[in-house]
Length: 256
Ligand code: CDP
Image 1 (cartoon, protein in one colour):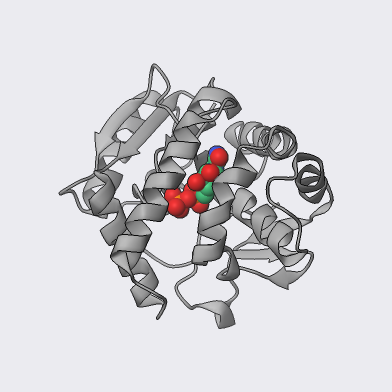
Image 2 (cartoon, rainbow, N blue to C red):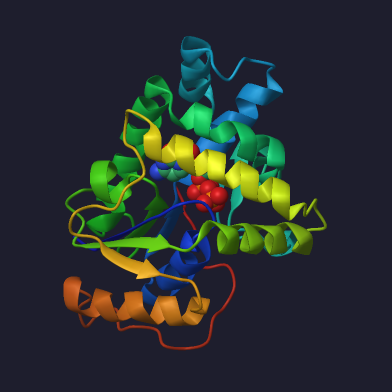
């Protein structure tokens, strides 16, 4: 099975690193946090109380979330395009309001059940090569521990929380959004606490995960470490040699 799991706390670099690893290996890029964010956005949009287990669980069941490669007119820095019931919510799922509520939604057992089944199905299909890609890179909190524990390469990315808050602030500033670092830091601490402390599928490294501290490392340096590990842990085969060229845009997105 050609599957790489990348878990870790908020803004530890999972998406940027995972996107580039997927491009280099011609693997599907699947950022599972998007699903939790999309359900959270739908819950808030419908004015439902995020703490209402049953009502939120129903939203997860009935919401149609699609993640596709961006089209040429959509090149605004996005890695993928996210739609909820055909509405483009790519940036709407990244607002501070979603950040503040997503951990509560993600701790909901009904939500995890619904989204977990979908994630495992997609992971197994693309990990076996049946989805048209050479494998899959899946990012999240519980991918190595719960969703795809049989994955042959598991990574856990980490960095100090103030460094992660700084990175998130930079990302938001690049999109012209609020950059109150003190508030971002506080929100991030709370989210890490809820994600690590929840009863179901808490954030933690799998026993056989490779831990990478990303503080002081550039994205290409972290990518390089993972691609090297992939060469020894996965069956990359002759048919799909590693692409060692410079980054290009818009490949490797989730196409379901
Ligand atoms: O981008 P960032 O690291 O800030 O967060 P994300 O990966 O988009 O995930 C948003 C939230 O979804 C997390 O804080 C978790 O509460 C939840 N999540 C989860 O519970 N399990 C996953 N596999 C992925 C995300």
